[in-house]
Image 1 (spheres, one colour):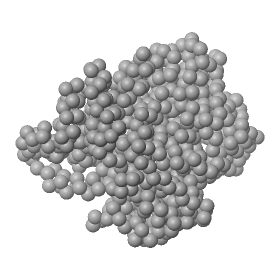
Image 2 (cartoon, helix red, strand yellow):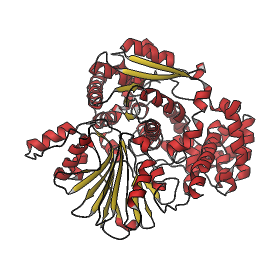
Image 3 (tube, rainbow, N blue to C red):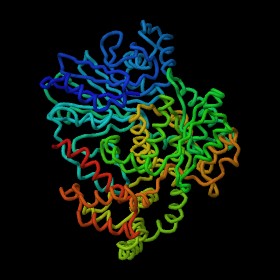
Image 4 (cartoon, rainbow, N blue to C red):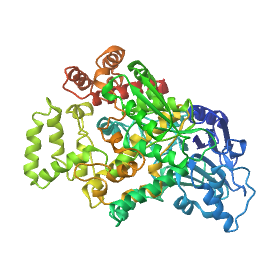
Amino acid sequence: MCGIAGFISKDIDREKTIKAMTDSIIHRGPDAYGCFMDETTGLTFGHRRLSIIDITETGSQPMVSASGRYVICYNGEIYDAHILKNMMESEGHHIDYRGTSDTEILLESLEYYGITKTLSMVKGMFAVALFDKKDKCLYLFRDRVGEKSVYYSLVNGRFVFASEIQAITAYEGFNKEINKEVLPLFLTRGYIAAPYSIYEGVYKLLPGQILTLKGVDKDSHNEEDLELSSYYDIRKIAAEKEDGFKGSFDEAVEELDRLMTAAVKGQMVADVPLGAFLSGGIDSASVVALMNKVNPGNVKSFTIGFEDKKYNEADFARDIAKHIGTDHTELVVSDKELTDVIPIISDIYGEPFGDSSQIPTYLVSKLARSKVTVSLSGDAGDELFCGYRTYDKVLPFWNKTGKLPGFVKGAGSGLCSLFASTKGSMYRASMCLKAKNVVEMKNYLACTSAYLDKLTGTKPKVSGQMLLKGQMNSMMLDDLTLYHTDDILVKVDRAGMRVSLENRIPMLDRDVLEFALSLPINYKFENGVQKRVLKEMLYRYVPKELMDRPKTGFAVPLRRWLTSGTTGDWAASLMNELTFAKDGFLNESACKGLWQGFLKGKEPAELVWYVLMLEQWYQNQYKKLSS
């Protein structure tokens, strides 16, 4: 895991600029710094290294291929690098490898097989910049599901890229304005979905996408020079795989066990200490149990508990760890420890980010980093195995209302909207009745308050497509490609990287992912039981009675926080300042109305939190940048 940055320019102080860019993401790689400068084109790569595999200097980046033609600057891990190496050698491609890093093997494979074929074979998480010195061509590409991110932009005609947006803003001459178009979506969902960012003209590469920039030696570039293509489209894969598994339920459990075990084993390769998050839920328990299967008695697990018993799963996690036999570390954190993280949230994420579980995720990452450098997690279980209650709730409502004539739904929506200003549930009902399909209805449920319309002066931008035959399958796929990629994966990556912890996600292994997509829906959800096949696999290792209870997750008591103590004072102060609104980005009176309604218990804490995150980011990031 590392941090990458780069640009193409001859008319700035390149050494100073690349150092400033990489210094802004030093947390991603505190172990070493490296840079590459091509004198003929002005292309410059910078790299911050977190040493995981081959921790010697032979794994340092940027790295030049054995032939001297290609240069790589890479963030991530390739779990099957040894297989690539053996394949090349069996085909007669022998080189004198400098070390044992996955970087060197990936680089040689990219040269030997080409980009598309290599990416079709590799298993891993990555964001890669590759420079072809011969053809004067630059490539950026991202892993299949989006575990690692890369931003890019044209700043005064100069192409710039980086792992995090802070490094883009550190580029000399950065002059981008706030992208007002993304604000309605952020206030609805709490994140800014790729390919967009908070800045106009700064984009995120989509998962499974390749950006090609030819003519690197040109003096300047424009958007027409940037060619985007896809080597992996999870939507198409899901459509091809849907209901493809024809075996019995027991056979599905057996196959999931085999694939998950292989994925966990592959992701446990590291030359540094390794552990796992253990929340007490099905997903993380599954990963930890299989880690112990692969390496019995040598697994380190980490969990945090909360003083507020309503949100505390530490006792459950402790019981699971005891049964499995892990070296378990637990930390019970106070409200003060949780709220002490708030001032650095905008520094961690670089752009507005509203998922409040960002705070406990950061703290459990910090706890794990005290003992290990790599941690595995159980993320993606909900999206792959039907773990969200939303699916079960929205489907009956859609089946009742979806077939109603348009004029009936329109009248119902209008009637509900009459009461929308006083009751959030009526506003949601009004919005849901506008839905064209069940996926869109699911997304309309995130519309929590009529103040969404008032804050930006526009209706929330909500969409959703039925990309699969099954309704629940379509809802899961929508969450996997949006919420999971742009919220969950961003949260885990930034929280971990802030403390220089690499996080790995076995359920996003290509084989596990595609197998899950192929399963019949009743293997995942039936008669109110969620994650059926995953639970049955887990019960092979952990007794059912330890797991058969409601899920809590990493939720935090937002309403209590924002109405009491120092956090309440902080929230009141920001809502009084409202510089973001006063500068014309939100409606100031609507912000104040939202706040007063919240204090009276009428408006949702989540929407208030999103506004607070916008305001904090604006003061701590944008204002400092523009001053």
